[in-house]
Image (cartoon, rainbow, N blue to C red; front, side):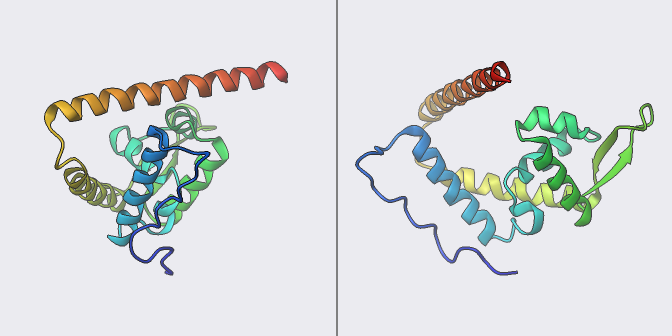
Length: 170
C-alpha cells in the first residue's frame, strides 16, 4: 500500500483572513494525530476512511448495533456508514447478521480480528494522549476538556439547527 504522507504533516499556512482559533488548532492536532496513527501502521484499508475508527469504537462498546444506530450515534450519513460497514466486512473486521426478531434489519458485530484492531488502536491512542498532554497540569486538563466539550456542544447544536432549516425548506 502506498503511504499518503511521509514524515509529519505540513503545517497549515498562515493566512491573515483566518486567525488561529480553537477549531483550527483542533483540526491541525487531528491531522497530526492521524498522521502518527498512519505511520504506526494503525490506519490502513478501511480504517483509513474518515469515521471508521468511530464506528469501530461504537461496535466495541455496543456490539450488535444496526446501521441506523450507527448513523444516529456517529452523525455520519447512512451511505457513508454503509460503505464503511461493507469494507469492514470485506476486511474481516465485522460480520453482518440478520436481526432475529426483524429479518429486514441487520446487526453488525466485531470479529476477533476487529477486537484486535480496536485494542491496538486504544493502546496507540493512549500513547499519543500521554505525549500530547505531558506538560499540562491536572487543572489545565480539566479546563481544556471543559472548553472543548462546550465547543463540541455548540457545534452539534448548530448542526441540529442546520438540519431543521433544511427540513423546513423541503
